[in-house]
Length: 183
Image 1: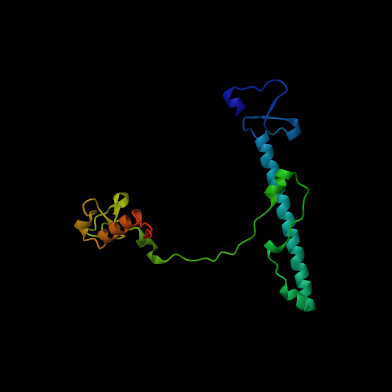
Image 2: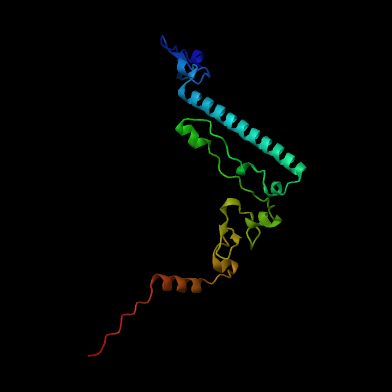
């Protein structure tokens, strides 16, 4: 990238080995700080994954040996990855905080119903004209074109009077003063 733009690094400075355009240092294997951090993160994640895999395979071997012995305690053990503790790798404080994995959750697959496509129709309910993104959703939960969007044009079933009365009653609560005692 430096050759394309005619940029020459000053004496004693070297460009990043990944050709990202920043300067690298010999202490970081001629990488810039960002590329070096990314490389370290990949190495740490690879080591953690390998350690977790080794532990999981060791537990599976132990479970197989226990099942061969028909011991009653082996049936109560579970071999999930979330139950297995990950050994410490003596990482720096910031890297150790990123190395903790959240618990694995079981998510059931729920297929979408066929009526999910009918939730957002593209046509006016009254005249069946295509409305696309310009459709108006009424309070009766139907979509209408610009002409039929008004309640009196499409015979809306929503009770606007009741809604208005409830809104006024909620906004203006009745305040009753305490009764005064007669002397």
